[in-house]
Length: 400
Image (cartoon, rainbow, N blue to C red; front, side):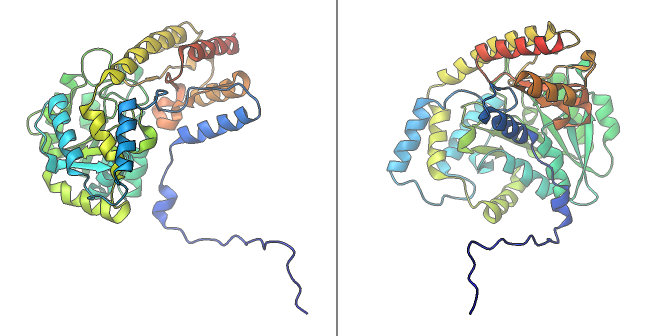
């Protein structure tokens, strides 16, 4: 008689012979920190979340209605890999008006979120022997995807004493015959800094002199507190060597919709198209029609969100500067502060850990964005003013 199992068999773990590139790929620790904070919250802890980088506002009502209408009208099937023509046209119109250079719809690629733009740029241009200059501190996926593509990420330090802007002389010293791609991000995550027109002109001169392609991450370009955020692609000779990354997540509070786009040089359009086909096929069609409404519909929700972020910026930076041992630069854009906490006797990871465990406030250690941020933490002020005030009070009690 054959014995029958009394329950489901447990599968033994089988070692996998993983590709080397998988071992080198990094992660985005904001999701890990948020998951840990939510686990504590589930235990009844009153956690204030200042770690995740997404607006705490709802997607505008008109955009949601457009998506619902598209669903009801049957826009639930595959679309063109590069994006629906009506959205590519709307993006081209908006980019031409806002970014200061003419954009043809044929150079627009719509992607499910903005991260594919980073991935496609690295896969198209990165390979063993190639160097990619990335900001440090900087969004961790830049360096991670450069390594995944086989290239070597080379950090350009951003320091508080320079308002977290690129030192052009230092940048020039990092360019070698192996350098092929330079990543810039303005307004910047995690520092909230913004490159000046003079900075961009100097960077453009270097790119042209050394035949570099620039990946310009402009996802926060609409969240600016004084003036506007210029695009390097608007400078002479730069549109044909710049991949502009942008999207709908931050500006229209559409993080969960996964809608990004790239403005790419003509030679890269078919490359991005093949990468789309080989990875995700296309971006959801009903979401794309909602994005048309986002661009062409009323912009009052965006303006109101930026004004609220402006008020929160003042509250948070003022509060951080009053904490003993903490210094903080004033962000020019995005919705992050990046204070230096070394005067407290702690580095960023220690400060973030104690703040979570002892004060129920979740922030990100600056080391999540590179080595230069070791003495910093990132504070996202995408939370209510009441919660931000309470979080600052808890920080003060911790440091007291």
